[in-house]
Length: 115
Length: 116
Image (cartoon, rainbow over all chains, first blue to last red; front, side):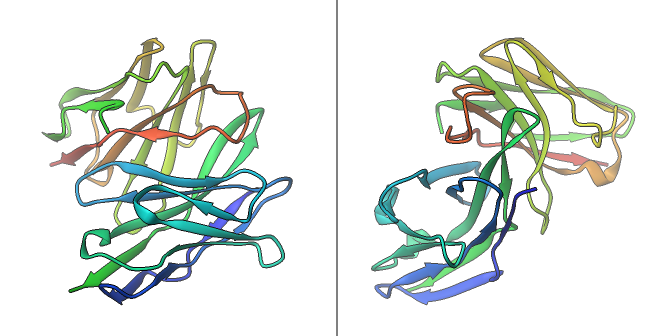
């Protein structure tokens, strides 16, 4: 069975500073990893995914994520945080379940960017 | 978010009511999903649908009944719900059900359900 851990319930960062939201995963087979963002009273928006290839994946809104196979991690990063980045961030891993693909989500990390 | 729409956005119902949630996707996808998002809990996958099949989730109570009349529409029929069913219900779609684990799921804005 696959699983995802987001060890931080909340991350606080000042605007303009770099941010990191941590994610570790467990999966048998190849890891296919995703990041989503959820703004208040909204659905999940896809940010980026890792399938294969370059360990640094670039996504929407200036976000990127670094895949590290030896540490089984897929941390989300941004060089310079904006107040508008404040939201709930979910890491997810995809795997096959009885022949169809499913996403297993972490519990989410709230990012708060202060002015 | 306009690729997947959900109605209503908010719903308040009593425990004896019957209501339905609607989801429509405009992405040409062949697989659709219902998720439940409760406070401080991971997203729970409730149902998976494609043109060819519906995947049952035996842990979901029978008071939730999905319907998928075509590849663009998905309903969740609700009856005799409990207060603990109050949550945000999210619909998602992806290109295919068995196309592989690399497909991206795209989510709708959700329906905030409150059961009194």
